[in-house]
Image 1 (cartoon, each protein chain N blue to C red):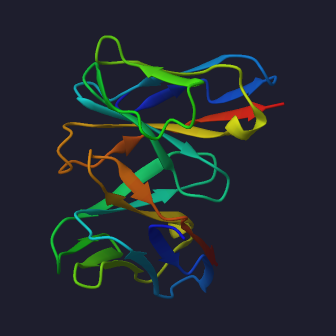
Image 2: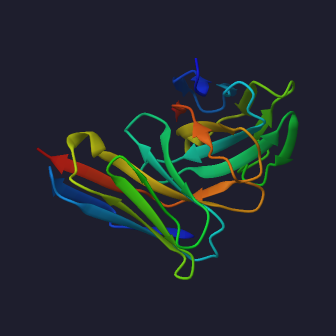
Length: 115
Length: 110
């Protein structure tokens, strides 16, 4: 497809389990971003890649969160030993370049529920 | 308090009426983005404003940036049910990340 694709759309996990969320950006987009959106709030920045390099991970809430983009295309956000406070919508966005002059295009997100 | 404050938090308008949503930043604005989100879906890019005084329009939606006031407004003319959703403003910050306001929920009554 032409847009940012995220999978799965919904994920339910038990507390303590590990989860992996996938993002397939728009073809040719250099920059990739992950955001976390709590109910009733705007998205909050987690991490940023330019090609395969993770240039900013300042928004990752703990060392249980890990993101990678090994070939500069598809990215995976992994959460280890999930906690209830990890329940949120995780949004992925991509942009053509990372100079702030191009808009970020978002996927539909993965809604994560931790029981 | 949030870095970006949006007002109002929610509004209900009669179809055909005009409305304005405001976004005020506590920091200097280097770029302001407006997005629309429907429940359970991702953000749809509407407009990007980069220069003080800049104004852009798309169909019945107009956005303006007042750099001195660190403020942007989104104006919808002759609202339609298709305009309903959550409107989010986002500001570009160092490192290309965006910070967002909490959103304005718009409902249009037909």
